[in-house]
Length: 337
Image (cartoon, rainbow, N blue to C red; front, side, top):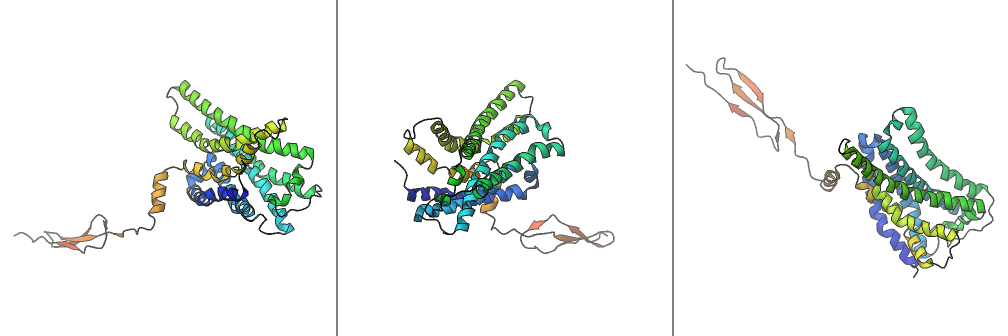
């Protein structure tokens, strides 16, 4: 049974609001902490959160609206062209970043010397991240705006039906489906499983000679996100690959449609999988919950002592005391005869 459009809007809205809040929470702690901000393994996570936040505020809201009322919110050609571009390149950027994260995690864990110099970091770290962001924008700008497309706008379909311009040519349709959906999803699944196997094997071979805690943190940071992609993304992409290979579209059509309805959850659930990897998560949550509690003022409190020989008064500081000042404690010693 196919899920009605009205219910799809609630499927998206349900995790959208908490996902937005958790994204802000994650980004605040990743960007405010200098050590977290400079760590190479966190850069792709920060990018995933940033693009996911844009996805929630644009595509997520638009999908809720069109599934609720049946038409796009702003019925103008300019909005249709902008929405077509954003809804095309933004998910693919996230998929490519996630695929590269699965590959790069092997390098970070087992070949850390590849990032030993600034030149190596530029070549093996920053350049792939830039390609994952620039390539989708270039591809979809070309297929949507530069290549001629005579398909009319439709204000009752997602992206005004402009995505049909991407798949109208056979070469672009094959490249988009294989290069942007199938390959990244298979990379995420294969490299994530391989990472677990390699880490466990290295731990067995080393027999405690390596710092297992560092390997575990590096490896497990990405695995919750990979698990989400394997469950929600890999399933329908595998069916899509089977359909492309010749399987009848009738087989599993209802299940395929329903699982595609949860496709946005891969982006919406990523912040929840990311927050697990934050160091001192419990402490950060307590600070967030109890941030309104006033800080008790701390003031140094002196007391006076009269020296017995010269009858001189000396101020001696006490340890810092909280709450209100308790006044000056005066201790006087009378000179002896």
